[in-house]
Length: 403
Image (cartoon, rainbow, N blue to C red):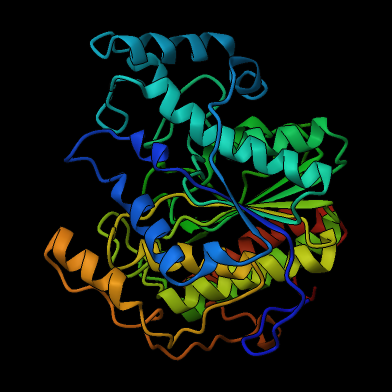
């Protein structure tokens, strides 16, 4: 199926991971990773009627067990998180715990493991066929690596979902990361695993944390070509970003032929995000979500797990984009000119003292130049795209100039 408003295609059985308990992932009132962004997303999705669809199951996630977490994290790291969780004064900066990005807080282990449990459950439901699509908008903790927390991320739930799929018999998984930041943790966990293709489209490390994710980072000796990075310059907007996405991602997904797509939809690439320097709109990010869903339909029989990620414009941006994510995964996309429900807008004004957006989109005109129109060596985004295509495409039997 292709997600186009008005066609009303058959609805895929969809699981959404949500419980107010997810808001316990809370680094404190001054931290950008505000738990309110999750609550506001759930409230907006409910106001839009998405949680009431017959084919959508809203499932409260369980706390992942230590054994499950150790599928992708070292036992020593899980133990360290448990220590800090029990005693927040016991900082472990060598493990990334108790830092400015990841301040220690009581209950950290349970809060982070519950997010991981949501993505683990999503993978389980894809494996047993009870869901075709699964969304954990509280997940997407893509900076956490095997032994260390990083960048607001404690446990890497997306990596856990991928490993669960592999252990459940899936032969190949593609991971697509459209967060403004490089998906370094997920990439590192599967760096030398030829069964996992990680694709990250992000702002250049010259201007943004974590400073990695270059075109020449292509995977380990046993998995060369399975790490793919497109680093776009600061200031990149909808048209150039979508051109880069469509010049790299669909071709490699087709060549790799995964059985399941796991995607990370950090929405901090929005032009209003306070921590990044990209210039995308809600409309452009919704287009990327649609493209990922269509790739899952075309190449994976629809099997798709979608997570959240970054995004720090808490009221104006995050809830709209992740509500679009839920809607598209549920096969019931919300048109961009749909008015934001009045009850949700009233809640935002009462709770935060600001005027909420009036529409579900930013009312921009989306257009991008197809890669087939030609490579422009004077364009910084085109140069980044070509660097990635030259580094990776031949390893998949593709021509960097023409495919």
